[in-house]
Length: 464
Image (cartoon, rainbow, N blue to C red; front, side):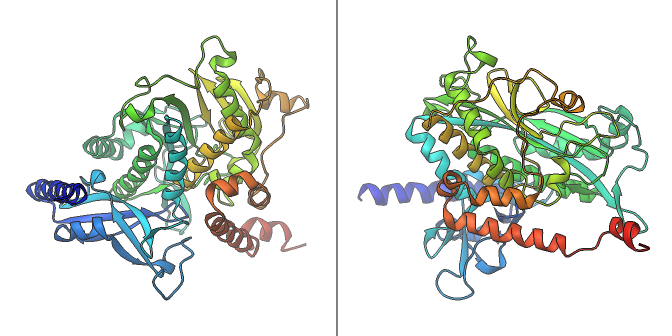
């Protein structure tokens, strides 16, 4: 038996052993999942008996039925195959008898060039060539919503009405059923939970958990979304990733805490930075950052306008990214392209030798947003870019005083798309086919938005 055949045999034995373990736990089906370009988890149920084929060939889907694949309606590349990654198999506590699995996208026997997860894999591979690992802590903020008797959306908890609701213990008490079900489900799925709290808008919550290597962190966030959607539905409400559902209240972000280590190949998924040498941190450097950290930051700020189209990809995203007052008196919206020491009024916050990238919101495709973020940071390192001097002001207070401000982010999706279209470095890193799909999808959203007539317009102009 040659080495190749031997490795194949070992892989099949390991897969059958894993299938036997799942069968012993009562699992009869695998939920083979992928993420479409809009960031939505998609997939199908595959009987456990079909696991080997789902790993080797993939679960089949009609390619044109999936947002953003760009696949044709006929021919060998019309079928999207999601190849199950065996290491991601785990029973779903909210779907008895079903194990979750992450898939890699293929078409015509080749990796799909418009697959967002594949885009992140390619950027991670660039890091591995340097012996580096990107560690990412993702902070999910979200709203619990439901429709009222009049059919309009509102917060699920009608008693959640404090003017300044951050850390409201009464609301947490009323939502303890949802929060405890989330705790149990996420713990069973291997999440290392850190905290849960009520955020600064009615109906808004945040659940924090331990960081991970970039690709694993993105996979884990998609599993978080899938779990939250199921648990919220059980409690009669909707887990909403809409960035700003309430006018006059803060919106939801999906902040990325970023750090780099070297010797990354020795760091397993789930291990904390420390297995390798920190590359962004320097206790003697400005804001606790090394030269590498500053160059990475410079790359993010240089490409921020194009990144906005990927990290804040909806019309509603720019209702969050606005320098407007909040009913609670506080807003954390990162409007201006600046970096500061633990400064939440900046787009980039330096804290504890890492960078908090505050641009993304939960409507983004997390794989695509992370891929673009990493590509921008690497461009900053490779080009030796220099970040601006640290901002030492509360930028909202400076803005109120009418003083000169740093450059601001695009004001709407249209301007963000123009910036992405003109950002040659980001387009090259992500690949033209994928960027073309992004531009097509989001231009269609912008056009559909402008074709609508809102209640605001009717009230303002109908009697004019």
